[in-house]
Length: 100
Image (cartoon, rainbow, N blue to C red; front, side, top):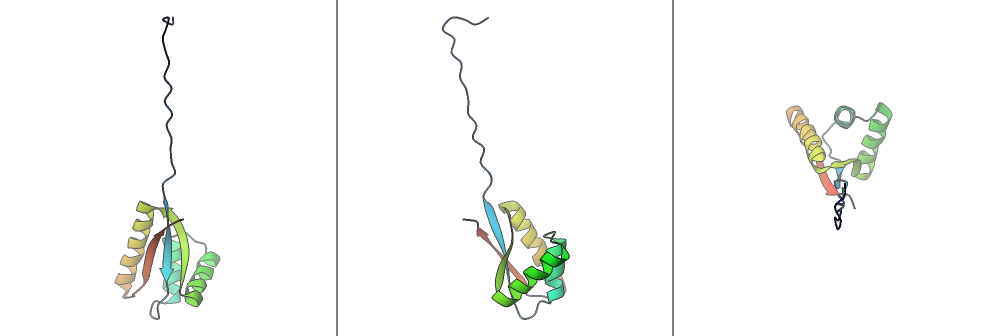
């Protein structure tokens, strides 16, 4: 039973999507094309065709955006790729850039 003069408050919760960060892969003269394709397939879950096309884009243009993720996921993927590259002795490099 409502009490006379009772007011109801409604609370609006605004949920925002997390900021996205582009993962950018950079070309170098030492990292093998096979290694890059493997990274794209294993860490970024690209299929064989996508991985090969992205690898060629990086090779031909010097760099390419391979994916976009929330910050923590993007950092984790870049760190995984860097660790594998270091273990294999490659100077492979990836950077992050906030998606605009």
